[in-house]
Length: 308
Length: 233
Image (cartoon, rainbow over all chains, first blue to last red; front, side, top):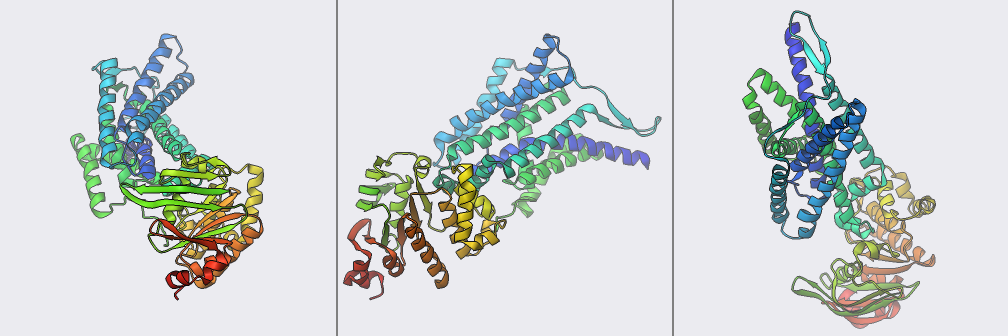
């Protein structure tokens, strides 16, 4: 009995770890959708670039002989966030802004083009082979009987969880309390009216791309350190999963993206553990189909109460 | 203070305004009346830069604002209460007012907030309620309050009486005349010609994208053609 419980607990821990990173990436989809009603299909690539930058930072510091973990982690995280934000900004400028006001299908296609461009840009500049990095954070806690199945939480998993919680709290405070956050919400609710109040809506839209990209970079750094390998194509499936998480939770809703990410992560790790690893993608995308069939607005996405 | 000089505005290939000239002097209430589709809202929105005039000039306080970005125009002392109110449904009353006073310096901001709450005590009672859950009248008050938060020199009102109960309409018009007494310049677009003309110093009648008449409010109110067309005979 104990063994069964521990095994379940282990899957839950793994699920939460992956789920929190899905949630971080999903924020980018949901924020951009909330404000311009479009899906940023190049968002997964921003995550991938985030991973690459973190790898470069960590390798660079190792070459300089710096291996004090807090510094390594902070430098990796911050450089990855900065570079990815720049890419987020560039995606908005190049693939979205010039096409705003036209047919909604066009920016969608240009974003997919942007996604291909970024994948191949990284592939050509960094090489097509997987890049690998030794674990920076090792060790963890084991609990359970000495001779039986032991559940374990690695320190890296704890870092992932803690950093995610901090990022989400910071984002929530920013959106709900700050001046720019209020402008983001107002612009999401009525873009034209925000403009009529003197708000430069172009800047607000750019800000959502930047915030989403920065959070994707956090996920990229964390997952890069967790898995220790990456290639130019990891953005595709991660982006697809995070998009699923955003839709699952209710696209346009921030708590929805967080919840959707966690549900998806847990569902995947449970499927992998109790059924078969090969089927975990089937389950996550099956979940997407079911939610679209039975509750198309997602779990937390509900139409705004509005009197006319 | 504000003048339109031979404004033409297009929606795609369709011309909605055929050369409109109109002016509003400081301290005046000027009303623009006309039927549905005459181009009233289009004219107001052309002033805000969305849509843009395809030819002609919009001057505000001696400055040509025809080609300025919307955000800049709206920061230069103009505030709008748009058609359909367009309050932010998911933001609370206070947050909506915060958006109106986005560029108001902090020390002025709370003074203005108190002023708006004094003008509309109802808003104070509902401070933390979401805008979308309020009644039409309350939303209209909020929309006016939001516009006042930026200390506008010129207040644009687009059909503030639309869809409201008569008693609320009276209240809104009382507020407008109170604002005029405080020195605000007001450009009022209305279908409710009777009440608008009673309040206005001057009025313009818009028909099919053209100004067909212009006079003082009192004169228009007794004008035969206006009575027939807009005041029910």
